[in-house]
Image 1 (cartoon, rainbow, N blue to C red):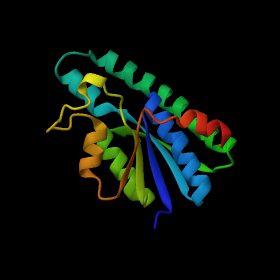
Image 2: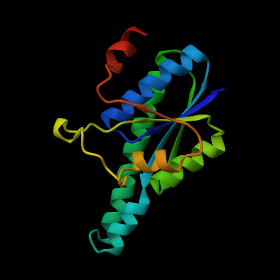
Image 3: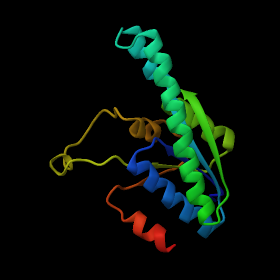
Image 4: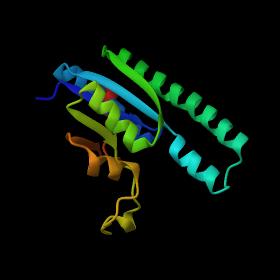
Length: 162
């Protein structure tokens, strides 16, 4: 049975729709809800090692991402509060997939909710053998069910009247 859900927030429109969907689920089914944003310091370090970012640029970028992440977490928290749902938030630092899965494990989540990135119409029939996105890696490595909120769903309109 699902009692706790964790939602991966990255600031994209798709992750905000996933947050809205999770808020509706949490209220309808009386679920515990947690939003997680990860500062992707693994990628920042990789860019530094490959001399694509100077040391001070790495630091500035991490500070900017922390500020941005906190703002997104506050935003989805306020969306939940506006619908009468209590939600936890967590800002993490590290490799995105590892941090999401670790947070889900520590929270004892029964499900992870992610937003699906939009695909171009001409790419919709293209099969991909290798997942290169964080979403694909979360799906591939999770030991608990993943709910993927599709980008075409009219979640915002449903959320307004919910």
